[in-house]
Length: 201
Length: 201
DNA sequence: AAATCGAGACCGACCGGTCTGTTTCTTGTC
DNA sequence: GACAAGAAACAGACCGGTCGGTCTCGATTT
Image (cartoon, rainbow over all chains, first blue to last red):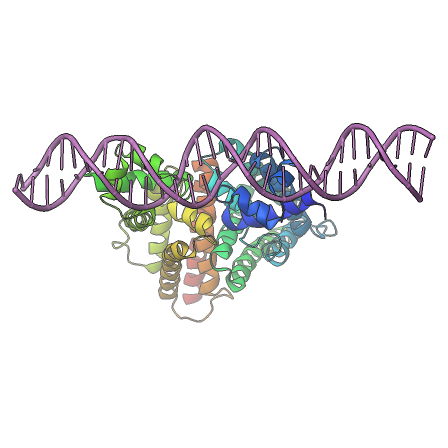
């Protein structure tokens, strides 16, 4: 583990705990057991670090949440697998994200004050939402609304459910509530599947 | 409007936009068109201001979200009214909360770094969750699980849905997505009601 | 005349970032 | 393999600016 990746990983934790703005260079330097010289030899600024931490965070997000998803065939089952990963592999990962989901922290704290940073964060959320929508569209036999519930609606429910669960979890760090919330989403999805089956019969 | 409440209301907006930590005394003083002397004549510290802003925020939250809820009789209809208020009166209120929900901002940014502040914020969330659960319990004929879905599960779904919708909304400020998400929650609740009716018949 | 209110100079601590100096590693030459 | 030369990596003093908070003092009210 070289110094650069040590700095990135320590920053990942600190940002997840205290946010970007509230984490000082001193905090980062102390956590990575280095100095100003050591830091600025690898990063041009704190913002430069931000983008590299964001990249690393995204990679970990994908590793955790998309784990084993390729082996699943049905689009709706892929979403279920994603939700299970989100609960059992991602949010639970206090090693990388001791303070909870990094992206929600960034999105909330940087929202209006640092638009050029927050824009980059938003892309991730749009990507997730688009992925959910794509899977849902593929999972339905036709693009037409089903049972009065459009895929847009289902997308929003699941997407917001994931965000809300993450905020909830970072509030009280209770795995029980997290489990309940995500299982409820899986159940919601499951009922859609069943109803769909009925229509096909 | 005296200076003290001017400071509180300007701080409310600034905290909603940029958070507590990232809002400087200078920002507050400039927004309230006063000086250090003016500020510290009414508040003992920035933390003191925090608690008074939190109180004011809560009062506004109640005014907006509980509006007309007493006129509604059925517990589940009360929740529906709450959700409608949340969407049409609360999150939309850019006058008081230009950056989105103040409490989510506080909860996320203060979470692990300022536990004694965040603890006070959490109380509000616990209160909302407890209120939802109480209404749901009262809305069901018995406390027993219904159709395999416990009131705990429904509570989590609606609670997290509200949180998620708020985060979503502060991300892209799109009323359309907000409308879709909350309507989906209302729909979810409505289906529960209908199924309940069927069981009673 | 006394009390309250508000303006703003001032304080030490800390912010992100620069710069200089030292140590450590890499590379070319014999 | 020995060794000098250069580059790269790192430590930490230092910089101007800003942080939250204090203090003095003039203005206003009662």
